[in-house]
Image (tube, rainbow, N blue to C red):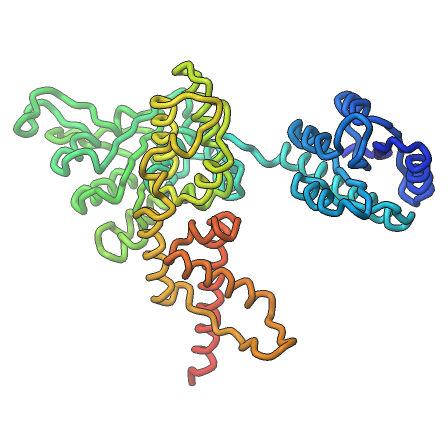
Length: 491
């Protein structure tokens, strides 16, 4: 961040008051430059040329209302903190200004100390915001290798891909359907030293079990009934590049043995052929199941799991990626709108709120299909609620939310997030710990919404991921408490 002296704009049409503010601020211990503007238009013109750090804005100006200036500043995303100055009789205007994005407000007549403290706080806020923006620009990316998203979980994914891609280590990608596992595999290939080699994909769930071996290792002509031609096989086709084995947990146990031998020796023996062939490939595999659970259930070999599970990457579901859903939706809206010649440029506020609260069981793939549906069937400047597919329009009371809420409620009843034991709050003056108040409020909201986490989040005006994180935290606390109690009771 620049160390230059911060600039403060005083927008006040009464010259004596403006000069008084200037004298207060310039005599403060915090060095600053103060410029005075008597009209809103003059201030806006100056802001267009150079944004100050703080604006001290009077509500009543001769040419325009101060709130209109504030709205224009926020609409233009000007990096500045606005302090609204109002008279004693217009506190309601000050409250409205805070809703519009003002940092704070002061009431005329304003004391020197009150003005200094408020401006100093605004300068500190602006400094921190600038430093955070600089850090985000350097470390936080809103897109990477085909992915779109700036949530912390996606930043972790980006860093793992960038760090692990240059190596030859086997990668194991997990995540729900539609989270981008193949996109992740492609990124690992593109950022590797094998980028100029082939990238071969084999979906173990899309090929009949009796044909998967020949698809993977190849076969010679006449090796089995129907083998009318020779087949090279994915393992040989990927020589010098990357072999992506999608839905690896669908592989039959008998083929898992051969896969393990292939990983150990690096040689392929095609079906019906006696001569083994060497191949140099990197393996990236993926599954939408829990691989450890598959091992515990005996459906996946433990030795093969550890051979493949060298560097794991877990792709988070869309519901746990904070505001990424809006970034992705806008990307698809722009892309599909341009392709189809539609006028769409934004999502309405109601649609944004619904997108943030909807659980997206199909993840990014579902969101992509929804945006394609909207663009194909509608046109306009903004996406409105009545343009959404039925599955989303009825989501406030429909099955998607009810089913998810029932599942979460069931997990909570089974100990995943136990009901809290809260102190009684009877009697005047009884104070409950803040954590208990927060937990009670959240649990009451979930109960009122019939167990629906997304609907409860909408009612509480917070992101669903916030509620999921809190429930997870309660789980971990309960597990730790149970472990501690068990330790104390053990002989």
